[in-house]
Image (cartoon, helix red, strand yellow):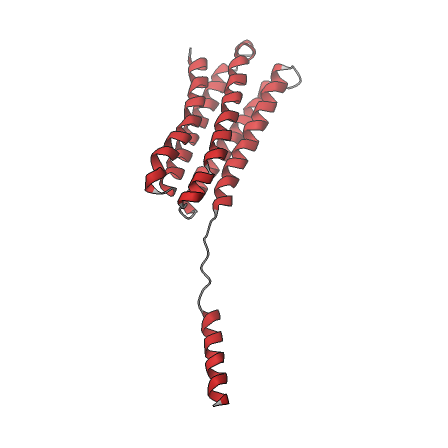
Amino acid sequence: MKLATGLLTLALTYSAFAEPIPHKKRALADYTGVFDGISAQVAAVADSVSAYVGGTSDADAVQTASNQLSTTINDGASAIPGFDPLENADALALVSPIQDLTSDVSDLVDAVIGAKTNFDADGRSADVLSSLQDQQTASEALRDAITPKVPDALQSTAEELANGIVSQIQRGIEAYSG
């Protein structure tokens, strides 16, 4: 009897460890990591615009930071399809990071619009316009990647929030298109 009990215990222990432990490939932290990375690069562009307007940096520094911002957004948009879908609570937890990013982008666009006379004087407004267009395209790809990752009931909200970023960049495009 002891032998049978021992074998049963051993068999149950083995089966408990033989089953793969379920885990999500990606967690909410991966999504927020994308937005945190983009926010950090938005801040870098804002710093470069400020230094440019202040005369301590040239337009090339702004262009380099802007190019990196487009790359960071595109990298996020490419990564998100590999993330697991979000549940309601996790999707709702993304509202604040997206709103914060939208606010940061709005401040950056304000600064870029405010620096237009400097960029015009240096003949770099076309470069700024091109960068803004690249960032808008990347932001649209980010929006399109994140929206299907939230539950169906929240997809229109997610799209609307992500469109806030696209709309802010559009303001800059309109300022530099004229």
